[in-house]
Amino acid sequence: MRPECPVMRASLRMAAALTGALLALHAFAQPTPDAEGALPDMPAARAPSAAELGVQTVEIPRAVMKDAEDAPQTLTAYWIKPGVTPAGKAPAAGLPVVIALHGCSGLYTQAGVDAKALGTRYRGYAQWLGARGYAVVLPDSFGPRGKPHGICTERFAARDINGAVRRADVLATMRWVAAQPGVDAHRIVLLGWSNGAQAVLETVDASLAWPADTPTVERAVAFYPGCAAALQRAKYQLNAPLLLLAGSNDDWTPADRCQALQTAVLARQPQARFELETFGGAYHGFDGTAPIKERSGNLGGRRHGTVTVGGDPAAREAAFAKLAAWLDVPHP
Image (cartoon, rainbow, N blue to C red; front, side):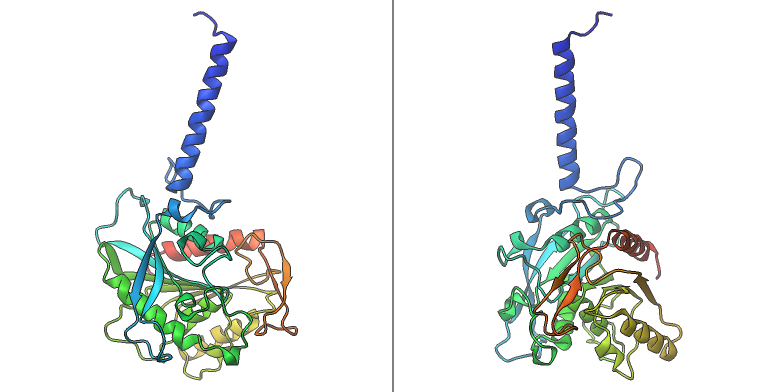
């Protein structure tokens, strides 16, 4: 066999590099299990764009909402279906769905108020969940009410977008999900962060009436919610299995209140599935990648309106492992 000339070797290396780059781009745009069936442990380092995710903007009817008379009649939301499921095809019963609930900053970056401006956290989670076979819907509770970039600086007592309003948004979204073709209305998961996690706690409160035309929650996940409101309810119980993840150093939504809530619920409802995972040394937003910093102007926070937020690599990794296990178990 004749030896390859240097030019040929260089051409082969260039072709291999180009092929690798194209494969990497394809894998990023359509996250799927690898050749051995492994699923991604955590979201990719760079969140995909809305276009890469195939985000659809939808309007959800809000006919049963009972907030202000001038409240909008529809709720803007973003619908994302997985390109390829782990098994290579959609399950016979339809796709499971995660309803993902934003925090007090809202869904968007400062760049806009549409799908293109969806925050990094939400796009990253949508990709990660899609790789696991979940469709994702992100309802916007703030934009239709004229506050697209959030309510973090509003005092708790002055907020007109409260837990009851957000719960009604969740119920409306659940009804919308149940009406979509190709989904399994018996496998609806609630996932929320901070203020959105408080909406999760509000929705899974079994002491509140459940509308007859609304599907049930299969399981729920709450990242660092404020637990004070639920803790104050003498009859608070769960209507669905709940995984609550908190940081021990959280000075915005303290973990000790969530520990007290778990204790109270299990005392009233010993058979309830209420898991609480507290990550040592972690602050509010530990599942993100932003550096630790102090955030001021949060009038609902502690320390005279200043709170600490930021990612924690160890807690982030452990939280995603816990979340994956919670989603994968057939009956939590």
